[in-house]
Length: 120
Image (cartoon, rainbow, N blue to C red; front, side, top):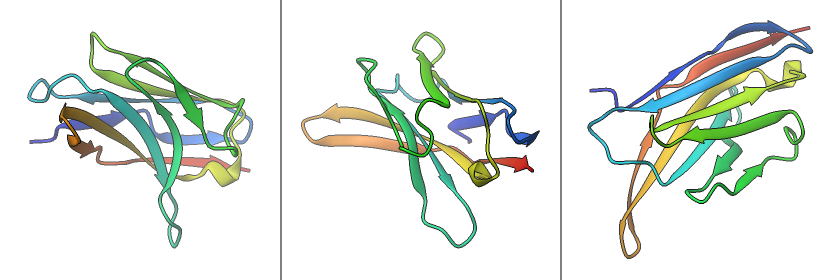
């Protein structure tokens, strides 16, 4: 069973906008910390943005002031709004969820990935 389901990827022209979403299935508990990663062929997976349970956000320098991460706890969903897209933003984007289960223990899950392609 798929536990994190991503949507919103696609093809967009440079300078355009795109929004991604990732929803956790009802089989898992409320997510504490959400993140978005991306990966291009031959490159390491890169942290794009994260948002903690308290709403603190962090962004990679390459996307600051262009991307916005947000969450809807009632829907157990995370979003990534992307603006002023550049060809170098082209990658497979993955959501990542972390649930703290006590002490230093946690469970984590990855989305299946969604392709974002920015044309020039």
